[in-house]
Length: 327
Length: 258
Picture 1 (cartoon, rainbow over the protein chains, first blue to last red):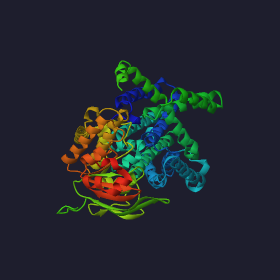
Picture 2 (picture 1 turned 90 degrees about the horizontal axis):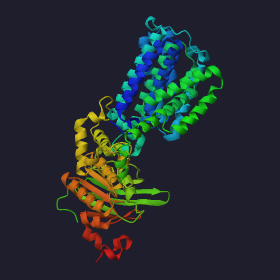
Picture 3 (picture 1 turned 30 degrees about the vertical axis):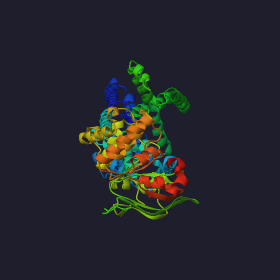
């Protein structure tokens, strides 16, 4: 199904972009620098987090400023289950998705009572509460000490191996998300973004679908958090902080919310800038600000969104004469 | 005034009232609609016609009175629930999904009616039976040739017809059209009137519409209701309404009577 923001270009183009990305992500670590592996991992994890966010924002039109809660809760699910020896990683990682969904089922109904900026403020408020609990509950979460030395299974000890594991999880997640967006369910989510009132008048129970979008978004955010915990072997309440929620918004908008490749690229840009510029100056935020400014001015629909528009325009160049002739 | 045998009404509005602050936008309105009727609501601007539609379709909750659809109370239900019971509505200000194709607009409506919108993994466009049905509906409103175009890029008249198609895709028993011809050229009006009448008779619909074009109203309606300042001023056949003294003073003016 084409049309709507996340399908404004044909799905085939997005699959092609992902094909190229898959090859790049698969090859780059083989160049031998450890540093590439850790950066690649972070890009993939943040990319997954951003894709989940985009299911909510780009697809359904709900701007959540509280996605870090799900991301952090996913990380703590892995951290706690493993460090307390309750469950192995292979159980803990899928469990993040259940926990993310459960949290969305609790917070979602409270947030979707309001729309627009009020919805956004509620998501922020509840996420801050979750952060507060994690930050203060020393006996259970370790408070601001976080959790260190998360024991990982032998098979995933090697960072390179874990990197490829992450790569597989992220690409399977992308495939799932893409399927969801193309499904009748996804079509309804997009119709809600465009015209929620009309959606109601054709029999769609709008709030139920908004809640479902929050649940799915929470599932992928929590999965991303779980993957991060597994890679870093340590976690910290900062993962739930509102700045993390802001970061994922930034990544999605930077890359462009009209596809899911956009958020992944946005994640790549931000992680890369943080890492590269962070090496030379501690004022890397200023650089991010400047680069953001340039992107907003020159790529109003995000890096991927705008370049897609250029490509379409270039392709249609020959056809434009007929289109212009039409009234 | 009534038929000899009276089948139960499709829609019954009983003593419906609604006020915005001190302004009574609907005051003690009662009427019922026979199955299969093609009827119009007319009245000056601000008479409360669209408000009445909003009260019936769940966008507004009445202050007093009730709305019954096939004998069952529907006032207070959500628009989604009312749509699912079988009332389809098109809007005065066109309400479509502009960033989706014409086909997708209608397809979503068909899938919604079939309660298949919770499907997560099968492609929407792979629901061939539903796609076929959506194309058929577009065909009845002469939009099938534009199925692949972005809804927002269509000319105004086509967008109005798409809005109607989305309502029809619900297979509703009652269709409510709010100024379906507003803003159309005279030629578009003529074709749209024909299409509406054709759909009404072919699908054995009950159809209620709001319209300002008196040629259309008196040309195709079997029954006309006149609203003025939130009050049902009169109802009757076109012949009766055109002779009604109150209606003439309040709305029609003298020139309609020869």
